[in-house]
Image (tube, rainbow, N blue to C red; front, side, top):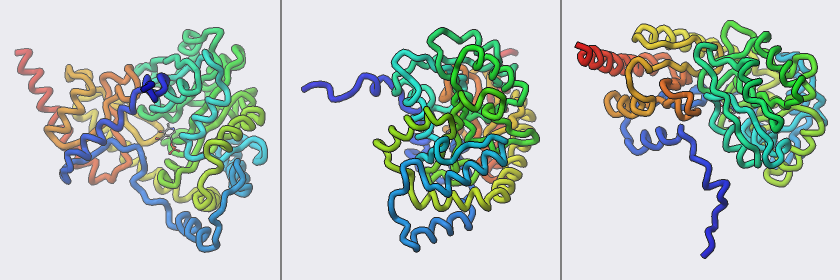
Amino acid sequence: MRNPLSKTITGIKPSGIRKYFDIVTEMNDPDVISLGVGEPDFDTPWHIREEGIYSLEKGRTFYTSNSGLKELREEISNYTYRHLGVSYDPVHEIIVTVGGSEAIDIGLRAMLDPGDEVLIPMPGYVSYVPCTTLAGGVPVIINLKEENEFRLTKEEVLEALTPKTKVLILPYPNNPTGAIMERKDLEAIAEVCIENDIYVMSDEIYGALTYGVEHVSIAALPGMKERTILINGFSKAFAMTGWRLGYACGPKVILEQMTKIHQFAIMCAPTTSQYAAVEALRHGDEDVERMREAYDQRRKFLVHTFRKMGLECFEPFGAFYVFPSIKSLNMTSDEFAQELLMAEKVAVVPGTAFGDCGEGFLRISYAYSLEELKEATDRIARFVQFKQEQIAGELL
Ligand SMILES: Cc1ncc(COP(=O)(O)O)c(C=O)c1O
């Protein structure tokens, strides 16, 4: 029989995050605390859920237009203007998708021809590299540096550029590092993109979750709206992961082609979720603020606690992750994660799940209650102390 599988897809590695979830599930031990999950621990605010329920009661159980409910696209347009200062035409420049995930996928498919290069800063979200490959593009990894607080610099982009570079993925606020880019950082990148005629896919799914700094979109900088696809969604800011709703905003010519792929593969995003999302954008700002304040408290607690353990931990100003370094413990991220899980029953994700340059780091999610974080960090501190004493003993 012929091999039924495509070489492209068999060549893609499964997500490194899943490995730890699978181990935890197999352990089936109620004492295990997982700090591995990248989704809010909050329930979707009740008034948003109610709007979903109401839409079902009203019998709104049909397809919407391919690009999404008109009133939702109008609210997205208002939201991006209100929060980012960029205005998009709801008819031609916005598409509602199945999570930010689908928006990333169809955005890359719409822009790439075989051999086109995509600059992907790492550590970064797990889907950028496989989606680039699936779209026929060539991923070119830019290894971000801890000494730059994992920001992307103009020099790093210039070094990675070739005549085949077509798209730069800009993943800020970042999963897994929690790094952000400020206006001056983005201005430098925008200059390179304009000079070298590069398009940007700016994944701003954590844009509503920054702490003490304003989130700036590269699309808001002069000359950038026409070369940027803005990715966003409801999963993180509104605690709506299971509703599977996201969106992309960008130039009409690209959005038209994205809509074509979406039309044939998906038809439209879930109707109930779209009605709920209208309510989220109209009346959800206070909920987002309430959750953001809780995340901020947890963030400060974790940075302080990891530093107290003697581990280096740069202060992240976005998303809901901290990225402490375990380099001083002479073990790999994978060894640390495995041994910690066995010894103390705490699951964390090794930095290498987000690219090779994540070696020596752990991704710790703070989408957990402070009580859980306190218990988990007590256990981690015990494990780290044991390792530190082992190293000190070897030195004697
Ligand atoms: C950086 C980033 N982008 C996009 C996504 C996709 O989110 P969703 O498809 O739930 O909108 C995630 C999910 O974890 C993420 O971390």
